[in-house]
Image (cartoon, rainbow, N blue to C red; front, side, top):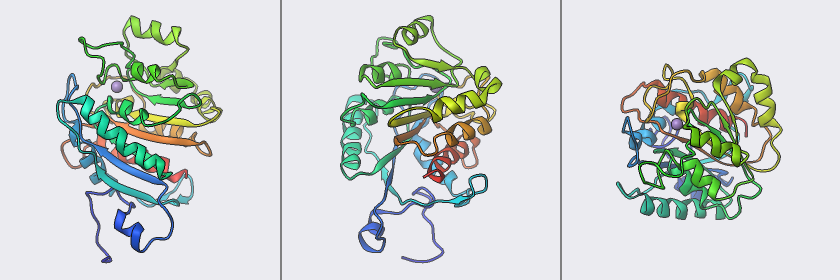
Length: 291
Ligand SMILES: [Mn+2]
């Protein structure tokens, strides 16, 4: 290993497999996986570049968090990108489930960088039992359609498919776009949702909702939960969203919680310095600082 070198194709502060097999004694606790897949995107394509640009943006940050007064404590292993199959969700999902299953068997918590939102279903399919797991979902959209233009598996239906897996509970934050059927489905299935207005007017209540979740939590962050002013390069931008500060506070509310997985999806940035990928990388780092 050479000093003073870095590998922007790997997430900042992460290690590679060789590092763990040779020099590092601590087992990695988190495994970062990129999923360059965007075949069901409706509007702005390019989420296949999310893993590349989120990793690149991650080198813009410190390994110390001023607000938490903490450095990065736990080992992070970047295992690279999934072999996605363009145009084929089922095969991509099957590959994804296989990799996540292997990580979970090795007691490594997956952090998945999308890719479009449909991939969250492939990740969650790998968990044996979701009955005790609360899904904490940050998004502008409910994503609760049963099908979208006849397709059961899509970025627009992903949370309905996840509800089909019967998790303990789904809590959605940042929601500002839904069909009447999605709203009804949320009500009929006990899915809680909170709008940006509710979050801005009573953020402390929202922080409490998160900090009082009992049992394991899986966190899925569609970066379009942020306002397009902060995250313009997303599949489906929706004005009126959260600020990076709002999202930071809500992520920090996870301190001390048992988080069994995180994904950050829908980054379709294709240039260096795009605030979308910078905010996505920051969200992953904010989560890692809590550990
Ligand atoms: Mn969305």
